[in-house]
Length: 217
Image (cartoon, rainbow, N blue to C red; front, side, top):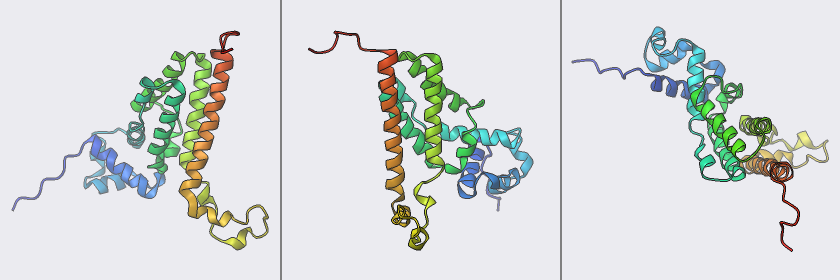
């Protein structure tokens, strides 16, 4: 009886399997030996597709970034586009939090990451923001999104009322973990709104100030 054919090893399959391992056990648990075992191949087979482990991690990180919707920058004004992009970006990272520390290092040579940075920066410059300020805005939002996806505020508190008894303003803190989703989503929405409102105010003051006498009345 002929042996079943082994699934063809390719870059996509390597990346998908590596992401599964990272999701399950974290970045530190990924090794080329373990990855090869999960794929049912010998370690050297991976090097026909990737020269180093870092190249594999780059491809994994880029596959996550590639799910972020950057088409919003072609369809909405800069404020609404940033809002929708930030939410899409957070969703992509929150689905794979263990890869976030690697992603937070910056785009490097990753194609999807560079395309995303170009889309954000380009939309801001087209809207009239000075290039330096557009860079600051993109960086600030990336810090905010990555930070929100990296951890949970609510999970930082344990379900032990006695622990907080000595802290008069934390007597209900033990309930936070049970409301993790609403707490974290509420915090993200509040922070994003605050950032965008502040940027819209700065834009009105410095980029497109309303001319005197042009308003109603």
